Length: 311
Image (cartoon, rainbow, N blue to C red; front, side):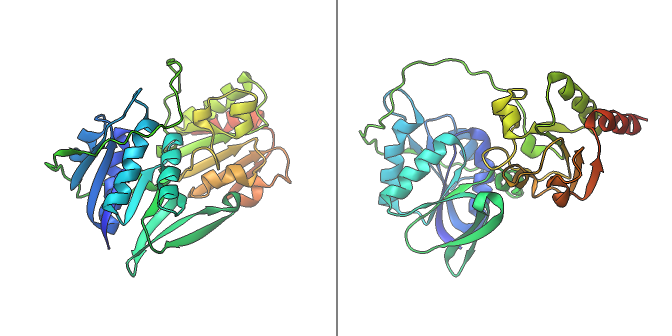
């Protein structure tokens, strides 16, 4: 076990799982909160201490990073576990640079052997896994959504840890808030879905998506997609993109519809218990990764499957 583990997240929802991971590998777990918004969540999940980095200037997360970096140097935790978001990636990199170390990105598993932290993560675009051992200095680890989602929260209980404010550090973040605009995002949690249908370039129109939605409803499944569907054709939101730069899944059932099966996408479903592929190209690489394959046009197959499931 490590002596002292720090956990850091951007949202209140991340702290319970972060603290659960910390409890598994450390004797003491201290939650670092940027601003007051996450303090209650950290206390509710039983952090031994709650350290608050006040956001300076315009209230940006980046403005509080300097205080966190200084505190890591002064208090020397054995590990800093961070929930992965775009902003937290930047914060993690800055902490690691200050400590003259590197970040272990998107860890799918962490544990301790002989007093050192080990972390498993994907390499080569998801085609393989690597285990890294952190020797000397704090281990800075970004935890994957899949790890946090599947971490058991059993045994967590609220603590009475009083928030302690970290000393402010007047260091410019280099980021200036120019304007605030409300952002419309789709509320979807693909990582929590037990059944997922993912669509690829075989989907050419909104009408095609309606066909797939019929099958999704019959399966009681969420629908995701490959990157070109979300960012090229704009047929689905970016929140539904699955793969290396998107969501990583561990569903009971993953149905690949009209997608070729490139590793950058399929790595997002590598943890699925069962993979079913529907593609009119019998030579599509996706069939090599599927447990069951159906060769044919999804426009004909999907309605038949849905009808059978609804019968």
